[in-house]
Length: 193
Image (cartoon, rainbow, N blue to C red; front, top):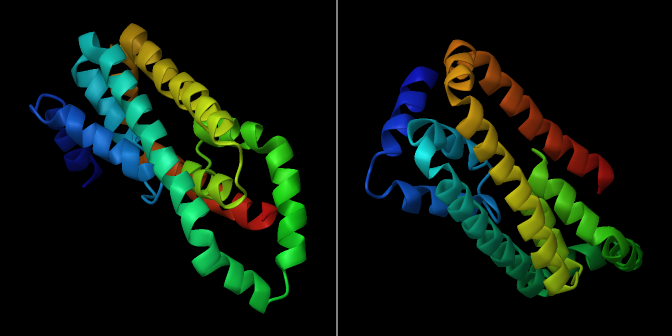
C-alpha cells in the first residue's frame, strides 16, 4: 500500500497540475489538515530535481498563506467558540495569563513549529487566538517554512539518488517514524497546553 502511494506521488510530480496539488496540500496543512506537505514535496523533488527550488518556493509560499488562514481562524472564531468554553470552565483568567506569556515567546513558537514535525496548524491558530503580532507571525512563518522546505530541497538536489534508494528501502520504517513524530507533536501540545 505504501509503495503504491509513494509511486503515485512520484507520478504526480510529472502531472501538469502537480505544483497546484502541492500548493493546496501545503496551504491546508498549515491550518486544518494533519498530514505535512513533505509527503508530497519529497517525491516531487526526487522526480524533478531540476525544479527543486521552484517546488520548495511554492510549498513555502502556500504554507505561509495557509498559516495566515489558520491565524484568521484563531483570531476571528475564538470569541464565538473558544471564549465561551473557557468561561464555562472558569479558565478565562488562566487564558489571559497564557496569552501574555505566549505573545512574549510566540515568534519562537511559530519558528519551532514551522521547522519541526510539531503540528504547525496548532501554532497558527493559537497565534490568532492570542493575537500575536501579525507581521511577526508572518516573518517567523516565512523564515521557518523557508528553512525547512529549502533544506529538504537542497539535500534532495545534492543527494537525491542515495536518499531515494534509502526511502524506497525503508518506506515502512519511515512511515512509522513519521506517524510517531506526528502523534508525538499532538501529545506535546496536550502536555504544554
